[in-house]
Image (cartoon, rainbow, N blue to C red; front, side, top):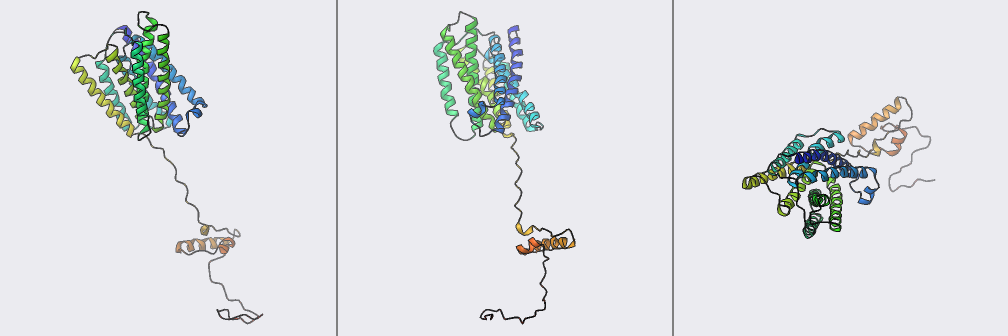
Length: 350
């Protein structure tokens, strides 16, 4: 590994830490404002804080791409996942679960296998303008298909975000190489045109990742981390002349690594903690409310009677409840006038 590649690796490490902090900030913002639109997010300081962190990570990433090939720099973005999962758990006030550790380990092992097969000198080839436009058009079609409404929107938006970021990285490498080396086919306004495509895909990837994090941090971030180097590697291998070590064996190792990384993504997507909501208190029945008339024993006796009536399933009279009357039969009081019959069919004379 030469000096340029070592510099690219070091810059990628710092970039991964910045991206991890940005991902945690975005996930916390998405969990607190699940139904918030983009306009509302633009009015929050936390959103712009995550944008600054993403910008810092992107700047370090751009410099790393100047010194290392796509097939080396992009897989190192997996370190974002290593930092973000424990950092997100710490911010949320919980411990990282065993399932999250297992999913993270599987994803990193897979991406490490891909990294072993990827090597090469500092990049010296760039995309031509027709190639850049073809890549941009194909990417927009793929993102449009993945971003359609349907099941698992978080994972599909995460895939779209990773693809957009990977394509932006490939186009960024073209811009940086062409801007620092005048021998490239892109000069002047053509470089500016590709730079505008980079800005569009970077902004689109940021917005898609924000919507993806509404479903949690681990699974969407792992999928972004996986889709990003895959998209960039496809461009590097097919259009920029980069290659894998080991020929056929290297290709098999890369495919095995992709399978392990995919398994890790599925594991992390299933381990997303669900929000716990406290059940609403049960409504208090009016028959169970007893207001004592005084602090004497009569009040406590009426409360006992009300409680026993509730246990027996009897319905208390509302007046008796308010006046704290004891539940017992009324005593027969002496009357000065003879009692008149009150059965049906009799009238009481005036």
